[in-house]
Every structure is written in structure tokens, then in C-alpha cells.
Length: 194
Image (cartoon, rainbow, N blue to C red; front, side):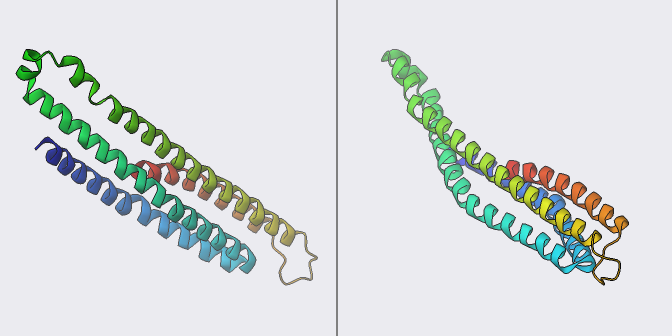
């Protein structure tokens, strides 16, 4: 009975967190990303394509790591429910445990499950940290590539139709810095939601 109650409680909490994330963070991130990409494509097609490539790579990384995180998280939750069920059974039979002198057995019964839970928690944390590291790496490389392309366009001769003004270059630089800071914050929110 305790396992079903814990499972129901977890489902309610997870549903609330996912709904909150998608309603507030994901919708906002999508709108800001689309607006920024359209603006960068308007300024220069190459810069816009670099930005789109960045988003595609980030979504590929999220998709790749999501399967691993999901697998370990489900296994960890199953172990947690088994431990909760064992503790519930032990508390229900506490008089029999004391009469039969099985206190040490009951205490050690969850040790293996506790160690498995700890190992899976560490693996999940490691995978999430790897995912955020890759996302940061991609955003830094994209930032450098976009700034380089914009700088190159500012150095073109005045007769070129593709020349970019210094003001536009600074605008791109400020937008990218703010946006990448925003992506880093959203990455941590997403990892916490998963």
C-alpha cells in the first residue's frame, strides 16, 4: 500500500513540475529563440544559420541524453519504492521482529538497495552534468563562430553590400551574451525538471 501511495505522490509532483517547466520556461525559451534566430537571419543569413545549427545540436544532445537519464531515473525510482515498501512492511511487523530477534536482519535488508540507489543517483548526476557541459561547449563554439563572422563582416570594404556596421556588431554581441546566459540558466532548470 505504501508503494502505491508513494508512486501516486511522485506522479503528482512530477506532473506539476513538468507542466510548470513547459508553461513558464520552455514556452519563453522557444519564443525568445525564434525571435533571436529570425533577427540574426535578417541581419545575415550565415549568422542565422550558425544560430540554427547551434539549436539543432543542442536538441540532438538533449534527445541523446534524455534516454539515458530516463532509464536510470526509472530504475532509481523503482529501487526507492522497493525500499519504501520494505520499510513499511518492517514497521507493520515490528512486534514480530523484536520477538524473533531479527532487528539486524531488518536493518541490513535495505543496505543493497540503498547502495544501488546511491550508485544510480551518482550515474544520473554524472550524465546530467555531461549534458550541460556539452550544451555549454556548443553554445561557446557557436558564440565564437557568430562573433567571428560578424567581425569579419564589419571589416569588409565600404563598397561591399554585405558590410556590417559597428553598431550592428555590438548589438549582435550583446544579444548573444544575454541569450547564452539565459540558455545556461534554462539548462539548469531543464536538468532539475528531468
